[in-house]
Length: 314
Image 1 (tube, rainbow, N blue to C red):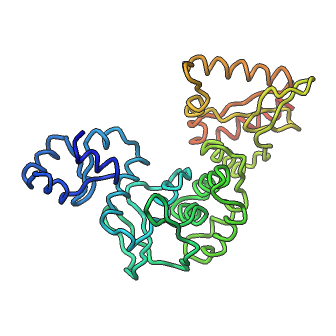
Image 2: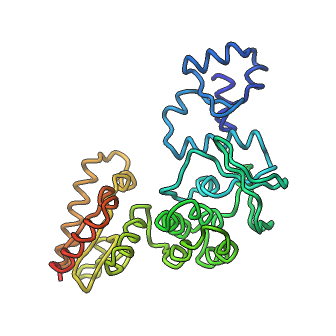
Image 3: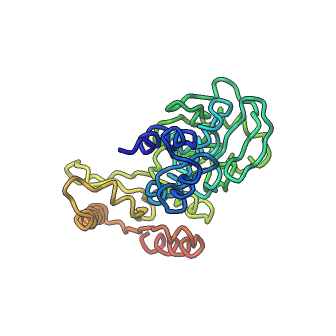
């Protein structure tokens, strides 16, 4: 394997000086970039072009973070959305073009084309952890810092993800909020912290919860378990409005990927989901309403449809 590819796999990127040490010169480096053999991530940092081309927005953000780490090392800690992604916390509705760092060396806050530098605010030793060799803000703080960059809806996505993945507790979230609540642009975080729930298992479910709240739809029970007459679990639905006799599911495509077993085709998963839904309807006598990503982008019409379904099912 190409030594530079090995370095990129180990460190996220390889550097100009490493290419020079292996016999490349400035002209051959430029040719590799023009010929789409390498992709220039930032000045002096590269990855094989196919790695960049196959990466989604989140993966590209983390590649940029690797390049920033090789530039700055422990002079900074990753924070905000970058720390959230490094911890594996779900993010939605925030810009991923720039990496976010908090200065640990007293450096001033500033914005570069690919990096936002934040001045350290109330950043104690307990607020910083080392993750895979990089300094990052702790999960609860990272989730709320991410929320600062977006809307209440995006803040809820990250707060729910933090709790669902057990990267932090409600107490951790509250303690982090106590630190950031007086910062500029944090007023909307209070609602997200109050609403955060470990039972929301995906960004789609969190965004659905926000839609219900913002549009005045009654709050459903989450992860509602349905049992048959013999006490056997038939299935669990994302949402349930028992008083209205209606069940609900968020039907994101990624859900089927999670359900896919070895040797099973997507079509088989979809069929199994249909059979599960039929069993849930039959057992409860309730209606079933499914939400998809497009529904979340048109909240008012989706809310009108849900209200009609709630009335009809009741």
